[in-house]
Every structure is written in C-alpha cells, then in structure tokens.
Length: 387
Image (cartoon, rainbow, N blue to C red; front, side, top):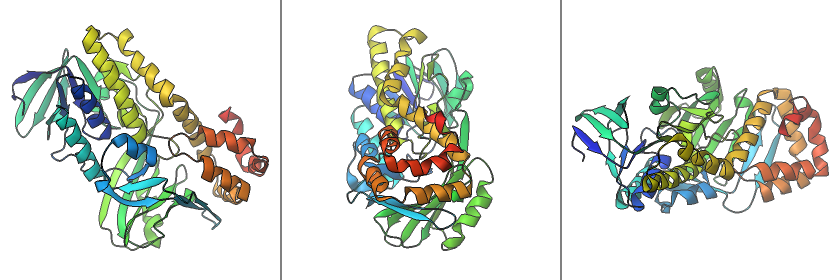
C-alpha cells in the first residue's frame, strides 16, 4: 500500500486488465519500481468481454487453465435468411474463459514479480510527470518516469492529454443465459447487427453467452436477437469496443496499450492478444527509457515502430474488412455465406484461419479459384479496398 500523500515510481500503469498486468509484470521483473492503478475495487470486474480467446491469445496470458470453461474447435456462421456453413478444425482453436479469474491470475503473477497495485483509485488529474488519484482511501499524487495507459476504450489518460482517439466505437451487450448448444462450436450471426455481428458462445454445461455489437440501436438489436433464447439471464453486461488505432500511441512520457490505443481486432472485436503484445512492447521501451534516462517523444516513438512491425498490418487489413462488412446488406451476406459453402474454401479456412492474424487466410482465399464465386457480393462492397 502506498502512502496516500505522495509516492514515486519508475513506471505507473493505469488499468489492471490483461494489458496492464502484462506491462506491470514485465517492468517489475526488469527491476523497475512499478505501480498499477485500477479504478475498480476488484480486478477483473465488471467483466466487459466475450471471453473467447484464441490459443495464441491465451498463451500470451501465461496463466494456468483454471479460468477455462470450455474449448472450441470451430464455428457455425448463420445468415439472417438461414444459410449456414460449419467450420471445424477438429482441434482446439480457442478457449472460453472467465475473464475475472484470468485477470486476477495475471495480476497475481505481476505482483509476484514485484509490481504494486492500488485498487479503487480513479485517475483525476495529471501533472508534470505525476498522476493524481482519488478513492475511498483518499487522494495521492504519484510520480513516474514513464506512464503506461492501459485504461480501456474510454481512456481517461488519453482524454486528459488531448490525444486523438480511435475513429470508430461500437457499443455491445452480452448476457449469459441457460441454453444448450454444441460445446465444440461458436455460432456467428452476421445479420444480428447491421455493421458487426452477433455471437453465441458455449460457456459450459447448460450455459451460453450471447451478445452483439453495433454503432447504434444496440438495446433494440439485442432485444430482438435474444428472443430465440431463454428470457432469463444469469449475467448481463455492456461494453465498448474501439476500432481503428489512435493516430499516435505515444507522447508526454506516455505509451498507450490495448483498447486505450484502439488495438481491438476489427474482425472480431477481441483485444486480449493485441493488448498483451502491445503491453510487452511498451514495457520493453519503458525499461530502456529508464536505463538510458530518455523520455522524449523521439525515443518513445520506437514503441510505435515495434507494435506496427508486430501486428500493425493485421489491424490495418482488419479495419478495411470492417469497412467492407458495413456495406453488406442481408442479401449480400446470405449470398456470401452460400458462396463460402464450398469444400475447397472451407478446407482453406480450417487450415489457415487465425483469429489474431487474418492476412494469411485472406491471401489464400483470394488465390483459390473457388473464390471467384465470392466476387459478386464482395465487389459491391469495394473489394479493391483490400489491396
């Protein structure tokens, strides 16, 4: 517990989600004095995530399987007109987790590495290399050499620094309901939302996670979508997904990671993989900055080079695919689903599908002669935008 009046650290991380704890743990393990500030009283709550993590994303978390509720091998895609395809890799491709449990385990690992945590403390001000917090225990002015903003899509730090934000924000609603589906497959309903999709995730015996995201009219869209399921809900949450990276992810001794930077994947809305990857890049730059006593923007700009080299092209492609999806009508979507129902294309998707890095699959599909059947619905949405 830090003194409420004042304290000083090498690195202060704001936000104790996966990105925040990954950054805090890496900095602490390198010997830097590190504090992670979390506005909520309990790490991992409220849950604002579908909890479906690719194998790669779960591996990045570096946790046990204690949080895993289910493992899935594929997905059913079902259009509003009833056309459907089944993608089954016949091996585990993703896990369904309890995000609260996962987040707490990541925080425990970071604390074991030496990171300190300050809970139930909201950031209410920024000074010259200081952050001011306020909570039930009082106020504190905390100094830092480097600030890592992992404080989510509504990033208080970005707002206070006047940083330009992500270009698109989707609102989402999700509920856990008593319902049985095949535990091997996620169900995707592209027409549940006019600009994104709805999902049905098997979260364990007798329990299914349903939700959707959209730019507008989310409550009414969700009310219509959930009519096919039980009217009762075990758990209901809302959240925000930023799409499109903020124009600059560094500045003012600050590095922006995860959803605070707009790193959610535009093809799925997931942000754990890119969040943790970005957090480790931010930690590497923060460690070097402290070693060299360099905190100017020119030095911190290497963080942006690192994450762009890692997954920048994937996010760029994903955002273009999101733009194409927004222009697909229900008729277009049904035609697309029917066109994808081709053994060769399905085999390609099963072999090269990657929730985190879709570029290889897109390339493979475009090289497949069967993809010619897709060109009619896709041409209307601006296929050239992919190139």
